[in-house]
Image 1: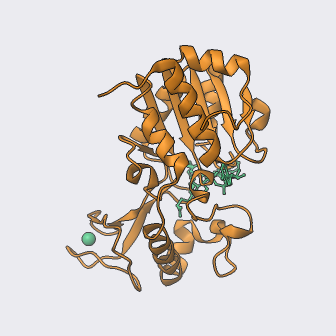
Image 2: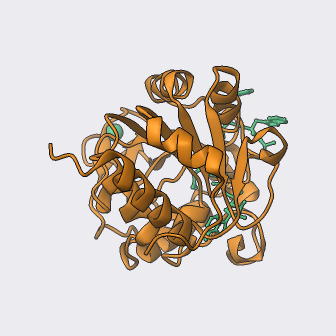
Amino acid sequence: MAGRVNISARLHDILAKAESICVMTGAGVSAESGVPTFRGNDGLWKKFRPEELASFDAFIRNPELVWEWYAYRRKLISEVRPNPGHRALAEMQDVIPDFTLVTQNVDNLHTRAGSRDVIELHGNIMRSYCLDCGLFAGGSVQEIPSGIPSCEHCGGMLRPDVVWFGEILPQPAFQKAAEAAGRCDVFLSVGTSGIVYPAASIPRMAREAGAYVVEVNPDSTDLTPGISETLSGPSGVVLPDLLSILKEYHGHQQN
Ligand code: BJW
Ligand code: ZN
C-alpha cells in the first residue's frame, strides 16, 4: 500500500524519469529483521561497543572474545529473515534499468531477499579466511564456530571476512559503488548514520555528480545536511512505498 510516507512532487517527478538508481544501505535496513544496529544501546554486546571489537588489534589481543562476538552475530543473523525493506530493494532491480545496491552490512540479508550483485563494502560475516595462507572458508549460514576456528588447509587461525577499522575496503567494490553513485539520477541512503568513512563519502559523491540524494531514516544523521530530501521513517515502510511509486511510473519489467 503506497502513500504512507510524505514524498514531494519534485521527488515524484524525478522518480518518474529516473533511469539509474543507486542505493546504499546501513544497519538500519536490517533493524526491522531484529539485527541490532551498531550505534545506540542495542548495539552493545556484553557491554562492549562495536568499536572496541571491530579492529585487527582487538582481534589479535583477544581472538576468543572477538570470535565469540562473531559467532553470536552469525547465529542471530541465521535466525532472522529479510524484511519488507530488503524485499522492496530486491524488486527494484527489475523495475529500473540501471539499479545498483551497495551495502555496508555484512549480514547477507539483501542476497537472501533476492537482490543480485550486491556490492558489499564491509565484507560478509558468513565467510572467513586464513590469516596464514589466505584460503577462504565457511560461507554456510549454519556454520557457527565455537572457539577460534582454524584453516582446513594449513591449521592457521581464521578471521571473519569483514572490514575492520583501519583496514582498506575491497577496492573493486568501492570502485563500483563510486561509479554507480557518479552516474545515478537518484541516490538513496538508507539506514546509515553516515559516521563511518569512506562509505559515508559515497552519498556526497552522488550529490556532487548531480544526483538527487534521498535519505531514508527515522532520525537525522551526519549526512542529513547534504541531502536533497529526507524521508523520515523506517525503511520497511518507506522502501515499499518508493517501490510502488516506481512501479506506477515504470511498469514491471521482466528479465
Ligand atoms: C533505521 C531504522 C529503520 C534504525 N529504518 N533506518 C576520523 C575521521 C574520519 C575517518 C576516520 C577517523 N578516524 C578513523 C577513521 C577511519 C574509520 C572511520 O570512519 N571511523 C569513524 C568511526 C570516525 N574508517 C575506517 O577505518 C575504514 N577504513 C579506512 O578508512 O581505511 C583507510 C585507512 C586505513 C588505515 C589508516 C588510515 C586510513 C574501515 C571502516 C570499517 C567499518 N567496519 C564496520 C564493522 C564491519 C564488520 C562487522 O560488522 O563486524 O562496519 S564498523 C560498523 O559501522 C560496520 C558498519 O557497516 C558501519 C556503519 O554503520 P551503520 O550501518 O551506519 O550503522 P549505525 O548503527 O551507525 O547506524 C544505523 C542507522 O540506522 C541510524 O542512523 C538509525 O537512525 C537508523 N535506523 N532503525 C531506517 N527501521
Ligand atoms: Zn590456511
